[in-house]
Image (tube, rainbow, N blue to C red):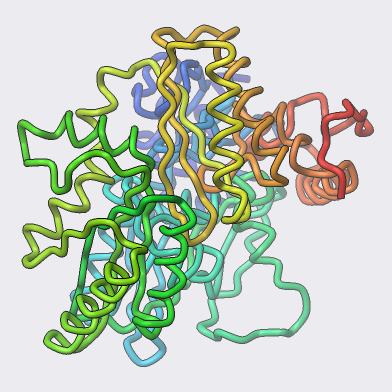
Amino acid sequence: MSESFGKNLAAIVGEAFVEEGEGIDERYRTAIGVKRRATPGWLARPADTGEVAAVVRLCGAAVVPITVVGGQTGTCGGALPSDGGLALSLERMNRIVEIDRLSMTMTLEAGCILQRAQEAAEQQGALLPLDLGARGSAVIGGVIGTNAGGNRVLRWGMMRDMVLGLEAVLADGTVVSSLGKMIKDNAGYAWKHLLIGSEGTLGIVTRAVLRLRPLPTTRQTALVAASSFENAIAVLRQLEIALSGQLSSFEIMWEDFYRIHTEAQLPQRPRPMPLGHPVYALIEAMGGNQEADRDHFEAALSSLVAEGLIADAVVAQSARECDALWAVREDLGPGYAPLRPFAAYDVSMGIADMPAFVDDARAGVLACYPEAKVLFYGHAGDGNLHVLVSTGSMDDVTAQALNDAIYGAVRGVGGSIAAEHGIGTTRAAYLGWTRSPSELALMRTIRLALDPKGILNPGKLFEPAELNEPFRSTGQERER
């Protein structure tokens, strides 16, 4: 079967675009933050939607599992191929088909790298608002599959808010396509929203129409400090009013995160603001009037300083200073290096619940590992926090203890265990901690209806045995 399957794959995509067994490159076998190395049987790199559909039909007939592999920047194993299965790379399907400046849309293939799409939009005077640290490697299909958000959710929303149309291949090889440019379309079920955030378990996205925005011509950036979390959020709310819709980012950082990362960056750049404040926030506003926007931004911050809500502030006066301020949040390599191995989490909750979550999560980790470092930062405007935990070692027992502590604190405030990277394999056992039994049953029903053979990214979202078994309560699910 192995030999004939490989030959049939080659007949579809071309012999040069099929790899087998140990000949498959390492970049298709691993993902950041996941210890396991996958051992797929085959790798295929189709050139278009028709080839994807033919590959899916071949896999369906042979019951070979398919996992789409992209930039491999997810942290929970969502794109790790099944052992013995097919790794499907859409890297050849990387074309930007059209940029429509009148409709403010971009039509592109799922293998296009996010940064390339951003740059193409900017060359046409438009903005693709989605922005995240992995922009140089994350692909469009991957950010759709995880419903990524990033740094500008506060103003422009998540990926779900930017997808106007989709084309996808279903588990039986059917191509379903709706590549319209309408912002409003209430004609029947919005099936595209089932696929957005489904982590490749309901269909394989091959093309998309994304909503663009007029490209802002001004960018105002500041780092501020506050004496409490409550004051920091008061700053956020007042700036949302004072800046009249121009506020695009509000990245919050607890003191320990700020201290560790700015200290590690000292060989490259000075610390932009002294230590000693409980909370720091990176603020960005984008507009279209250089002189007026700068004056308005600085006046709004000055008012908040006078009111006592901001304890200290640094405003970037040039593009270079702006990049230096953003480096505090994005140049994380030097600070993370001494903390490896570590566990990374992206969780969400109501903004008012963040202090309770931080206290409970920190206490839960330190109760098990008193010497652990626990760092908190994230997108305060949309309730998404990132947590990094370093204990000096990371075996399976430690990983489970940390998961229990962090996800237990999330459950305690009625939050979600996934805000950016999805569920994948590493969080599947905890999905029931923040989803009710009826929700889980509905998810399984949808998945089995669209993929009855279970060939699309098996083992993701749900643990393998769960799909064909009734839900058994553990007593740990959140009450609804």
